Amino acid sequence: MSGEVTLSVIKADIGGWVGHSRIHPALQERAVEVLRDAQAQGLLVDFHVTAAGDDLQLIMTHRRGDDNPDIHGLAWRAFEAATEVARELKLYGAGQDLISDAFAGNIRGMGPGVAEMTFVERASEPVIIFMADKTSAGAWNLPLYRMFADPFNTAGLVISPSMHQGFRFEVHDVKEHRRIFFDCPEEMYDLLVFIGAPARFAVKRVFSRATGEIAAVSSTERLSLIAGRYVGKDDPVMIVRAQSQFPAVGEILEPFAFPHIVEGWMRGSHHGPLMPVAAREGNPTRFDGPPRVIALGFQVAEGRLVGPVDMFDDPAFDEARRRAAQVAEYLRRHGPFEPHRLPLEEMEYTTMPDVMKRLAERWEPVA
Image 1 (spheres, rainbow, N blue to C red):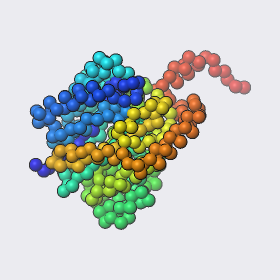
Image 2: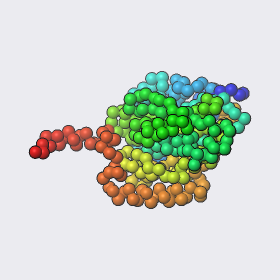
Image 3: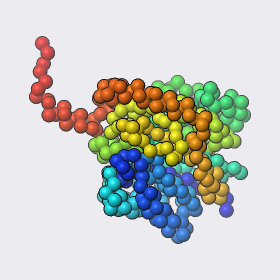
Image 4: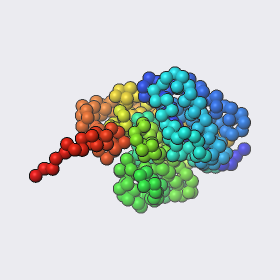
């Protein structure tokens, strides 16, 4: 049956194997059991369970719309069930992202990252789901700008009548919990003022100005701001619709041919290149990094997920991976110095406040 379908991607770090490098298969298997039961009961149309680094990723389709408490509760139960397995295996950081004691109707603000969109399926509905590890929500700002506002990346902005009118960006101020909209190309420079500061401002959604339809959505939860302390990086997810009035698949993937610098990496406290990799290589180990991004493509057909196709499993991205490795080597030589280490204002949820407090009385005025 046709009609609206909701695509929900919900992720959580609930235990790493070994350290922060990857997910143990038993966690994915337990999550599959929970989601399969829900599908049998009619709650889900379809689902796919995967991992990006040490993050468990739940990809689900259903007919209940965004922010549905039944769907969010299902994800929470899946994470709790997998956390039990993680504790049995003594995996590192078991239950790390589940920073609340009990589900309260909506998983937002409770630790896991969420990206959801509801749409009416087109005659062909290709979507790409991006999942990153060892980075934070603002990591999507540059790729989303290039996909939907940069004609040097996306030829369709120039030559496709359905895209020539441009796109609307919804930007969130993650510290002040407010949002603003920018229409591009007219307000492109205003947009860049904000999204060029990805630690604070993150692109949440993108809409077609020609049709008003949603084109992309990302998770913008900042885990440290929720918990009030450093408990791991946000490891964001993103959904992008492709083709027709949206950028082509190749235009959506193209921004990742440049491994741009993002925050995260070791202890969430360093800058590093975002390396596009095949799903099997999304397991960061060097200095717990460098940050990784995987991309799975699906055709959505009557709510079913036809796929996935591993979009970065392509030798055309080898040069991006090689460059990311070179940049990682260069940055590592800075050790504990900026710009490899994040600036002080982004270190407030690490040990920095404790050190400052302990040494407070040793500071002396300079004459």
